[in-house]
Amino acid sequence: MENYCLLTDAPADLSLPLAQELGIELIPMPLDIDGKPYLFTCFDDSLRMKTFYDLLREGKFAHTSQINETIYMDRFKRHLENGEDILYLCFSSGLSNTYNAACLCVEQLSRQYPDRRIVCIDTLCASSGEGLLAYTAAKKKQAGASLEEVRQWVERMRDHVCHCFKVEDLDHLRRGGRISATTAVVGSALQIKPILVVDHAGKLQNVAKMRGRKRAQEYQLSALERNLLPGAENDTLTIGHGDCQEEAEAMRDAILARCPQIQHVIILPVGAIIGTHVGPGMLTVNFYGKDKMCK
Image (cartoon, rainbow, N blue to C red; front, side, top):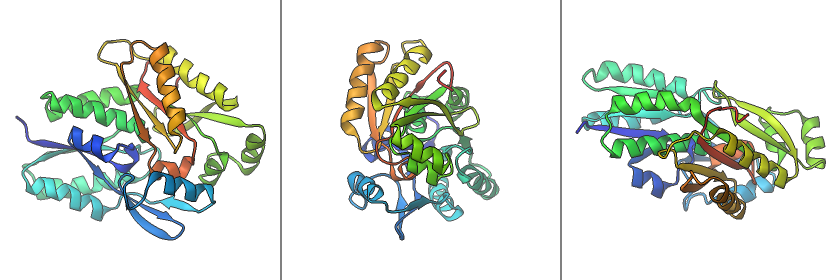
């Protein structure tokens, strides 16, 4: 069997137990919360989900940095020295310069290890949408697919990963420059819940503004029903939540009741990297769809 490893990064929002079960290595990303630095992979004893989101609720400032060359070199070299090829599914280039940093490292390492293959794919995805792509890629690898077969599949399907998400607190989008301060104030007063997607360039796009949580959730369900790619193999989706587990479970139950094609729903916490930019209460439904824009 071909000897290669599968890697993705912290913004994919995979839990450590799930990543270990799938044989996926998670690459950490630098994070700073109120002046305290972290190298964040996923929530654990060093930073628990509720602790993180409570800090955001208290108004603590958090910001992220791209994965740097030192981190990439350390992670990639371990596998290359072990005689393994590498398939790395990277956070969207439309949301971070991380992909460019990874490509520079791949270029250097390819000269140092000419007998090894290093493939870095821009997933054009984020959060548990990126996680869904990595999950399915890992399942294919476990079933015996070659690196090249998985690469081709990922590059074909990344344009079908639908991320349909709503945010609860518009201030975090304002801080990230996604909306204006005026829009944030007015939207919050009117209980406006923007619906966002990740577009074909891997960037965030606001596709709807729903008044109230229930209407926002109904939009997400309807988008899934309209766009879900048919086929028995497309029976799994992910739900990501920013410390709103009950809301995620209610969404799961509604999906299973309304979409019989879906047999498996994986609920994942939105990690600190994505959570920094969307805040508590974010809920995302991620699936393989006909229209990435969820129209």
